[in-house]
Length: 400
Image (tube, rainbow, N blue to C red; front, side):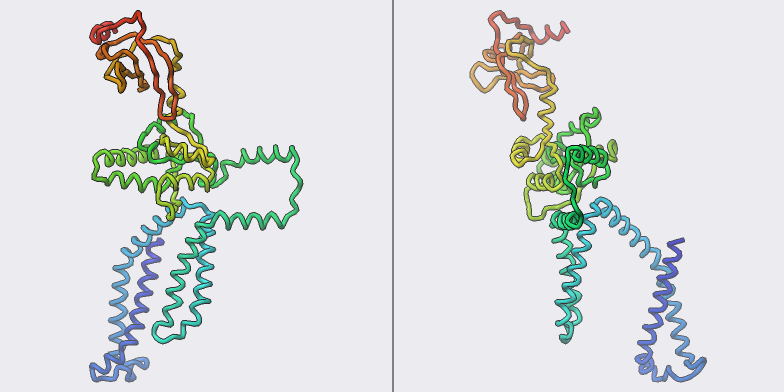
């Protein structure tokens, strides 16, 4: 029904436009035909005048009826795109941007009014200034939205008599904060987790979500998506594979956890580095960063941002190994130092065995000497005891 009403309205509008254009062209047509079309006739108009009017009405009406369905389809399509984009933007940011546009338009009219009387270019100066200053106002307001909202809240607080806080009031406020946490805007909730590029490519965050040990929303910034797209378009095969893996993983996350994964469109154009943008976004929204990047972990922690490192979590749930404990491992390859051999546990933990080089390719009983724990992972140092047991790999496989 709405489409039919819009089609009829646009068709009528084009029909009226055709009549107006016909009236404007009649003097030129009269001169070309050598006949006074404005001569009196039926209802004060000549028959040729009526003929041109009927032709213009039919022609422009037909154009309107044919073009309107495509025009409506185009408008509805892009209106849905704009609506979906605006739905992801916080209401406060939309209001602040509209205020910036309004201020920009007011300044454009004040500045452009004196120049509007100039010949030729005068009428266009206010239009150009309105476009430029409206966009500038929206940009400045969006970047300063936090300060503008802060001024608004402070002005409201100053207009009221603030009571003196007591311990009971503070407890009540804490309880209210817990109750009202779900009503906060998604982008402003402190329980949000910002995902960086490395943890998306890693993919283990999905398994952690399924276990229920991670609460809150997972926020994927737009600039992280852009970096993944650049990687997927790279000429390097490894980078291209990582980028495509990351994009596929995000799509999988959105299908499994549709109400948890959120894409944030906030952009920091003055900052070039993706990690720096992530830190700035975490500061502005009070969110935590989820990563397995050792350097980002350190830089964010120095700036007072909470970081959840996937490698730290993986190391925390690994079996505890105590110095002096013995275990049987398969020596895989040589180590860096003389006489060393390398083995791995099932969870990927690397074991450096002193004096184990001559036993490479065999299962051997070793004794743990020390354990090194870092954010990059856990490393176990061991040695071959004096009364060691060596098992051939095949013999060990047969025994199992």
